[in-house]
Amino acid sequence: RTAASDNSGFEHFLGRRASERLEMQRILLIDEDSQSSARIRNMLAGSFEIEVEDDPQAGFFRAAEGGYECIIVSTAFSNYDPLRLCSQLRALDRTRLVPIVLIADADDEERVSRALEMAVNDYVVREVDPQELIVRLRTQLRRKRYNDLLRASVTESIELAVTDPLTGLHNRRFLESHLQTLFDRAATRGKPLSIMMMDIDAFKQINDCWGHDGGDDVLREFADRLRRNIRGNDLICRYGGEEFVIVMPDTDLAVAEHVAERVRAHIAAEPFVVNGGIDAIPVTASVGVAELKAGQESAGDLMKRADLALYEAKMGGRNRVVA
Ligand code: GH3
Ligand code: MG
Ligand code: MG
Ligand code: MG
Image (tube, rainbow, N blue to C red; front, side):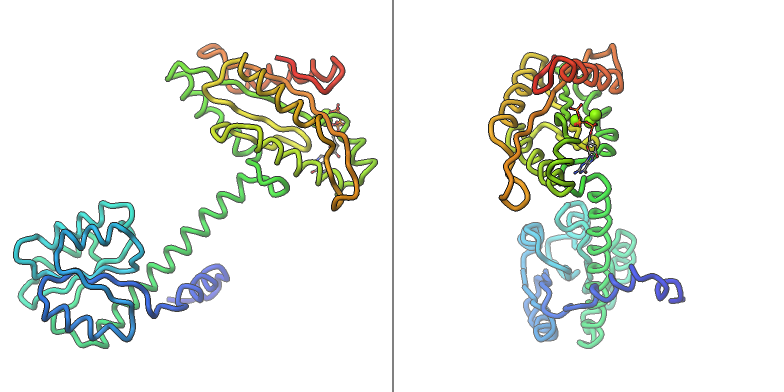
């Protein structure tokens, strides 16, 4: 029944893209028998980019380099179990999702049924009609293409769900789903962990003076300055409107305070250029810093202490760090 997939724009979109350009895709043929491999190569040469490897072990390493859309394995190896080769290909990350088509001899039924059980995708007999082989390969290529696109679009949706579209930083949802993991890791390893909570000073005024677009430019530039001044290992999130949280694994309070002071100074040092280079706005931020008390508090407790420190920084006159 096709009614369900006809109704779904998503599947239709993937289906259409999935069937584009199945020609000239790279296929690897692993076949020791040079007569057999020459025949198959000739059958497929006009339809696919076919490469041949006559040694099964060398074939495995070549497949492992990646870039093949399908692997054809012959069962006629003198010294090597073709099913073992297939299971090695299935075990490897690079080839795990690449379809495998077996070329079997007519009396090889038992091996074929074992091969199909262990996730070989399809098989043909060695004397196969060229047109049939091409159709079967296309089916495998189309299926792989569809699965690849589906997986990519799922990954993209997940990324969108945890990314702030304005700044490209992680969002609050990402922070909340990862903070506990980072905590547990710090606790089990006996390593420190600190967080920094930053809030841009008088941001309402920036919006009032320079417009909402000017405010957005400031947020983007602010995020860029954070990225440039924070180690890659640290997690930077836009927590809310003009509020940012930075999680620093393996970092104790003294170091975190030092980093916070450096970032604060870097923000205040140069005015932010916004509105396409027309306006330069002085921007400052206040920062609260706290170190995890391992085993004594939750993620929420730590966030509360950082928030309290931030509040003190605001009360103390802004543009400052409180640890
Ligand atoms: P304080 O120094 O106490 O932090 O003062 P503030 O003005 O920064 O704080 P307040 O919380 O009063 O104002 C924050 C402003 O941020 C209000 C809101 O309209 C603005 N804002 C929130 N999200 C965005 C956004 O995505 N873009 C822009 N341009 N403004 C935003
Ligand atoms: Mg506020
Ligand atoms: Mg603010
Ligand atoms: Mg705020």
